[in-house]
Length: 277
Figure: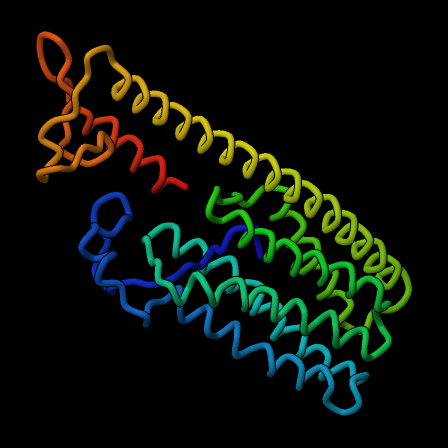
C-alpha cells in the first residue's frame, strides 16, 4: 500500500522485448487478464475469505486464526509481486490503477476492524490508521491535477510495519511475543502519522509550485500579447475574416513599419497556458 498505486495492472500477454519491457503497441493493446491484474483480484477475493476464517468458531480458535493469518500473508505478498510485475512489464490498465489501492486498503482495513471487534486491538489504533489512509487518498485526488505525489521509502516502511504488526495480532500469541507485537504496532502507528504529515507537506508544496508556474506562464503570455498589439504603428490585418480586427485570433498579423510580425506564436503560447490550467 503505497501513496502511489503499484499494480496499476494490464497487459497483452505478448513476450517482453529486450530489456524486460513491452513495446508501445503491446502496452496499448493491454489485456485485463494479465498476471498483475490477476494477483490484484486474488487479493480482493482474499478479503472476505480472511474475515470468515478469522471469525470462524467464535474468532478465538488458534487453528482457524492461523488459517486467517495465512490468507492475510498471501494477500500482503501479492501486493509486492503485482507491483513488481506491473513496473517491470508495463502492465498498466485503468482497472489496475483503481483496484490495486482498493485491494491494499481493503485487506488492511478488514484486519484492523476485525481485530478491534474481537477486542484484540484498541479502536483508537484502527481509527488513526484508517483515517490516515482515507485522508491521504482524498488528498491525492485534490492535488492530482497539479502533480502526482510519489511513494516514499517511509510510506513503504509504514506498509511493512502495518502488515507485520497486524499479522502478529491475527495469530494467538502470548508472553514476550505478545509484548513484541504491541511495540511493533506502536512503530506502525508512529510511521503512519509521520508519513501522513509528510505527504500533506508534499501536497501543499507541489500545489503551490504548480499554481505559481501557471500564474507565471499566464503573465508571460499576456505580456507578449500586449507588446505585440501595442507596437508603434501596429495595424491588425488579415485577421482571418473580413471586418475582424482581433490580435488574439489565430492567423492575425500586426503590421509594423517595415514589415509584419506574426501574432500567432503569442496566441499559441496563451492557449498553451490556458490548457495547462
